Image (tube, rainbow, N blue to C red; front, side, top):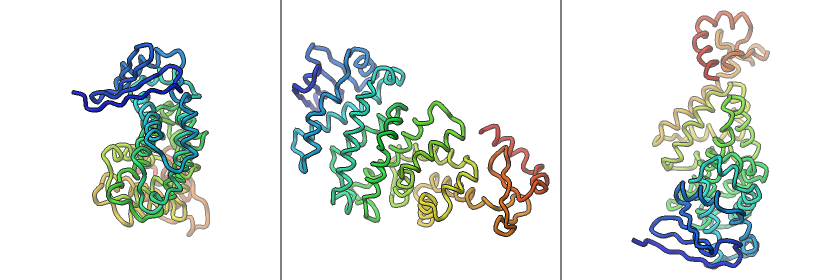
Length: 355
């Protein structure tokens, strides 16, 4: 049964003449008769292997440049954006990661990313977004395609270099409402999984605690980490996939050193203020998220208090020592550290082993 058919003919493509979506499949049809269903692993891999020159993004840049200058988009413009979204979503989602890294030209990734960044800048100035949290369906699809693209480490590196995350942070910051409108609330929270999926990709080949902290610092420097916590603070509900990416992130964030968490999440710090705002208003519908945030807050508040005698740095007017094993417990002196070792030993060795 044919559910929908979309056919395009465009001379701008050097190799692709038409693309269709038939019966829920994602079929690319080429002028030489080849067909690729890039909605499947086999089809996406075959496309990357079969093209001698992959120019499916860059070949549309002439049309894209015209779109960027327009205040209002017509049906053809929207179709062009949908085409970008279609390719940006299906290929990286279904193809093999190694094949994507080897066959997808870096110039094509940068071309796709540049267009997404430009659209974010454009959307950030739209009154409907600023006041109501509303944005167009075709832009939702375009930004949604980043979830697929940023599952791969190479696009994530380009996203940092090309200031994608700064643009995403500015887009989130531009929304001035207290909460999302009822019909568009899930779209606003798309920012959370996009950032955290990219975060997971950026540390895919290095799973040490130090690499995790470095990745957090990269997100914080772009301003987008604060906006992730802001999205959590003002949202009333979460899609299941958003909870699925938040939980492991918060789990691992809670294992960072107390010193690191203290610097990032104390009151007075942007992320810290957002953390306390979330917990003050409560997340009663999502106890699994609330518990993890409470754990981070507890770790932050324990900083600067001796784990043996309970005295604070402020009280003793000195900087405390941190346990070099677990990087969590702090002590006012070596005497207190030795006195607490019997009770702390098992926990410390377990944490050191995990680290």
